[in-house]
Length: 169
Image (cartoon, rainbow, N blue to C red; front, side):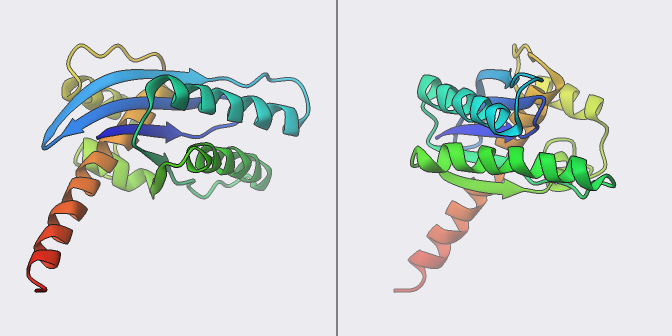
């Protein structure tokens, strides 16, 4: 299964694509969509959408996972991040991908083992889990972490579904 992880942001939206086969994970690609800092909010969101659609077309993922927004103390910042997150959910969904969402603490726990890990710890563990991977940005590392989290949770859901489905005859 090929998974697209997305770390949404209006300035930098990280993305990462991994391949998950059984318990094995393999890095495919990662990068950052950077909408222009000038222009209207609508124009910036349109550029973000176009960038994500381009990533999806280039790397043909089977599923997508998006990091949930944490509560921000600045309401205007939270609102802008919410707009970017909406685009991060919309772009893969309109391309026919199933989209899952994960809180940042769950992503960190899945990758580092601690829900309050620092960004540097996440980056280090992503590099360890994806040997030979060159991270294009901290946002791309976070996106790969989201994809890794989804791979772990999706395989568990399939396993549990298979057990539950097999025993219900």
